[in-house]
Length: 462
Image (cartoon, one colour):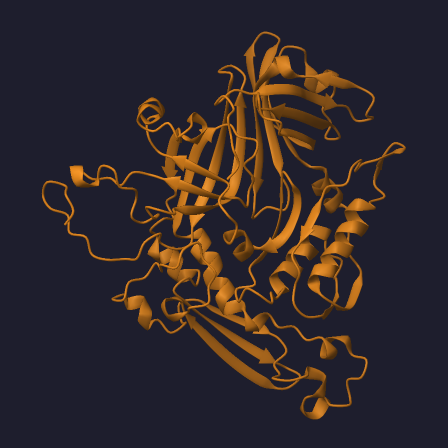
């Protein structure tokens, strides 16, 4: 667990500057700031940025904003060494309003520079007999690290971000159909099989560390980086000196998806079916999965979302069906049946696709993450938090009974309420001089086993 001793909600904004189209004019806009926001999400390929300005200098026309500018932001927390330094490409101005004579407000939006490069790059490579993880490394290096895009005589991408790649299983052959780099990487993520995790739930995203290609399952196995508590900060501080001010959650909101059974059913959470046809071998295969009976998911906790009385135990896969074309063979595909000896040198026959082997698990796992316990918590600003972290969130169990006044939420887990951070939003308000961080956190399983608790008329539980 990382030690944290900074003063809650305070921030040291070191610089917020915009750079013009030819990179020769740099303007500090700290005085015009109303607020700024930095976003990262494990289901988005790049980070994004927005800032609201109160402008009496006519920056839009005089700077000017023409869609070729950069914005660079640097901020940190006093007493903490960690600094967030980011550069974004400005791609949009929105919400422009007249405030008074010669004064207006508007919001500028930025995105990681790699997104701009991605818009005008096409992957036309052929990859033969390689793991998908190697294809991604090659694509990232060729189209981003070695990007030929320039602004004048200077490179558009002036620095290399780190790339973390989790290994994939097996070799495959792919010809990219002129896809954009991020689109091709996402395709590889969908096709990639893991040797460790049955779900093979690969994702590609950017956080403060750089770009990441890894499984959700590997994120779930990380140790928690911080504990958070839902209570009044002053009250908790007097009662328990171990709880620091930066650990106190300021606001909680619950996502409407939390108990949407229809959404869970239709997205393949409880059951799903994968039908596969192999046009070469003229074979058909059908596999079904029922969540309640499947034991090999990697989850934050071991307690399933279904009880032993659930009707969903009887679901046979019909709730959500996929139909795909793939390569069916129990042995070496190019040595099977009538194509034996006739497919020498054929890269697809030698390295067949295997997505059908894990798609049932993958469909259910993504639904577990997206359709059950989803919360958003607002904490004092913390530049250490990243999308992909594991945190623990202790929230008191609601009850009118004194017996449960010191107990934590049963669903989340009283002793080890671990959550996956799927999204991070850093917000700095200039007028209020406060820095807050919003975390979207999810659980893919209950923290404790389901059992019946009777609630009496006085609010107590027996």
